[in-house]
Picture 1 (cartoon, helix red, strand yellow):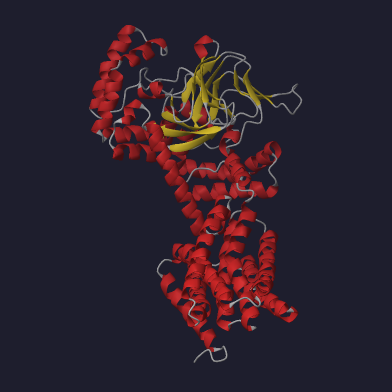
Picture 2 (picture 1 turned 45 degrees about the horizontal axis):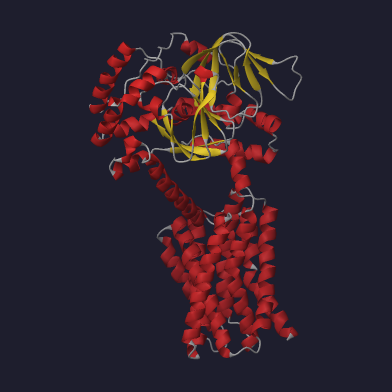
Length: 614
């Protein structure tokens, strides 16, 4: 028994030696997608041949088809169930294809929830499905923390909100911030201001961690111009008595103004035009460009073309506050960038001596470093005099960032400077690696024409998937359990293992390790940890092979056929579910021919077995 155990252990190690070899290769060579696809498909083809010839063939030759078939079904079902469990805990990160599938599945589930939430609002309840689908696809998700503010009174209502998770209190600034209502999951938020194109007349403050779905006005108006049913639904809403009461009670409009605005808004809506604002926006002064160019703390507004200045002039709204007003506290989300037009702001750092606070004068910004990095404010901002500020919301910033090459270049140049890195390290305790990763992601996203990454989201994603390495490890071990057992069963039954089976396992393990190692490095895992994971899996494969000898030594032939079926079913399911989809995802048409070459390679190794070619 001891020699058989040792033989099975060594053969198990040999079959899985390509796992750490693949990890080592990823340290010095990062192959392109088509190369990885070729290797993955080649390994899948080799494994297909091996399980057909060395697992299914012997069982069939003994007349054990039903034991083989039963084992295949059991093995396949076990793999599917365990693979889903592992993926739910972050194991989907081990391959690009499983990551994409997971994200698509999550996005599809989210989209179904969006439609249900939108249809709870009366103006959307009777719309055709295709219109609701378009509105749903135009929404984005915004996450908030308990105590965070979604909008303030006086903010432009350029978005419609649907609470996805958590709850939000609407506070009345006209009555000492007493609660007006609590908005729960599935309910809309700010729809009266949005549909009348008014400024918000309440403050929306989160009572718990959660998220909202945000429908921008620009997307809403684009869809409205093309949908008669949406135009009619909005016109019906504007004709209702609730609008008159809202404009009178919350917007403080007088009777003649309301009587003039409602017919004009209904006429514009039925014509497919944007809803006119209840109060026209104040025009930007001629010195707005000069104000922007004097913002020295973050030099991203200098030398912008006229169209960008015009966009900013329309997007930035003006708010006036009395001395003593608190703009934000340390720890609150940074969802807007503010520029002082007149007056002075004091920044108070709760962790430092308060005798010498930082003072922000006219023509400069405050809170921009938190805003740009997507972190929480590290200081408290208080007006030390009566002040006038210009406010730029994140969605307008992102819009300009995506549309203006000049503005994008200015932001990217600022990102590459040390200011943001020092801020993340000093104020938010990022280590050097995490800071470098944020900067790299920020520059990469900008090069791809996408928005800046949120440092807070990056931290939350890492925390959310902090168990991902162990899930990935379990997922790959799941791929290897059947092969180790069948090696042991073969040694225990015949004292030999087919060369073609060992070759198929070896050839399939190498691209598996190489591809997954590249993906795990991109997820931020250290190479030493990746190598340790693969090495431990190689050792466990050897142990599993030895256990296979113990379990199946002396077992009846039908038991051996059953375990061959379980192994074949699990491996075939794994090939179809992870290896070949990964190969096609990365390489496309190269997959089929590479699979054929791998299949032939395993058959060639079969000819090297004693009597294997006959």
